[in-house]
Length: 574
Image (cartoon, rainbow, N blue to C red; front, side, top):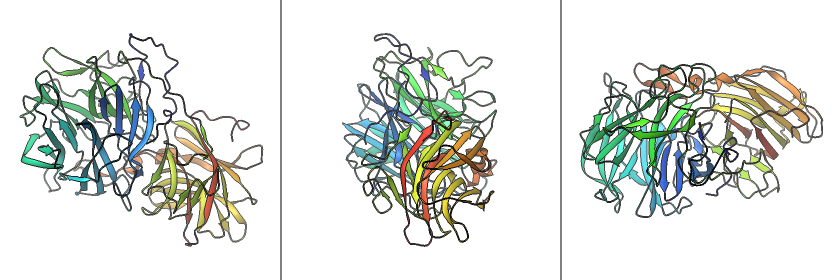
């Protein structure tokens, strides 16, 4: 993995800083856009957060920091087919809830690969891999218990530990009349043989919040603390803590209730707070990384998906963790804060990345992700035409196999995404353009294609839960490069275009309902049973793509792509 500058909006180097004193504030979310289920880890002076990537590659996104304030993306860990093959994975399937840990000089990564999540059943295979560095080389995956998802490892190291490791995961129960979240299981993990050993322990059945998942164990002050996510992944989401004198339990839940939740506070800017993990600084300060979301309005659609935030934690005299500081104004309870005191660490600012990518590097930069297939020369190339990203057109946007799609997370409610495209379609079944994409059934697509009467044309195609329609007539365009643009302001979006040498942009198509591309819109099912036919776990992406359903293998060349949080004026763009 190659370290690159942090994501837009994450440079806090202009805030007050002084060595030896508390640094600048942590401003949440620290990882904006789709970065859920954070597993936070410190190794020496380095902090890492690993997050879920679902059907997107590279699998398991990792960010690095030295001060918990400024974070830079390192790309992803699962970059090879031998580590993960997402071909055909359903929407919001694939890589769930990784756990990153370190012992014996090795990084350990545990992750779920979900092949089916519809209805009563969850078909899951959990794996563990190890490496001496996050750059690898990573071992071949070893099987991990797969009774459910959200696996993790706890290493009982240190002067008070016995050196053993423990595997944890939640158990899924599909049987009618039973709650599908059946509790947390634990079994000893043999690091040398890379397998579980000894008896299986059911250590926690959850609290009244139910939906108990996302287990992590920590040791502090003579106790073992079990941290879980509860309440489901939406508005009632929470972080629950229980403790025991032994890793195997029995665990007693904190009588004060959840450590963190946004439930019941509809106007908080950070909603869905839950699924957390803990880290300590060398000076003994504790922090909680957790997922959250920023809806468009009170309990509105979450187009950006579930993001990562950090809270400061202190311990009561009775030995329970609590969020530090006053709750947000006008509220009371264990609520997430948008501004949090940073630890007493030397500031480690990171530069902002360029808004524009001219595709002049040997590989895709860290903000880019691909859909269900790893980048290789069979469909993606950065060298055939230097200074261009060449895509060999693949299957349709409705497919879960062989898409030629390169995209980046939407990280702010207001943004602009533009690109320069060259392509020569000769059939209506050949397309290339820019897309605002949630999943295979929810997307907005401005694309260059062919019309029997008009020749080369631009079309706006919209897909709403699998129903495809074109809300505007095609626009004929001359041969040569064309610039395409997506502008999003909150719940509303619009496409526009121009010739590569033209001065101004031309609007095409109607206003677009961006709320369609949200977690809430994508989730379909019965909350009372916990059984759903479709899930929305990923947030929206802006991307570049190409399709050729004739099988002729049309190519599409992108000279540049640009992503900005503040839409520039017409004379500034491109």
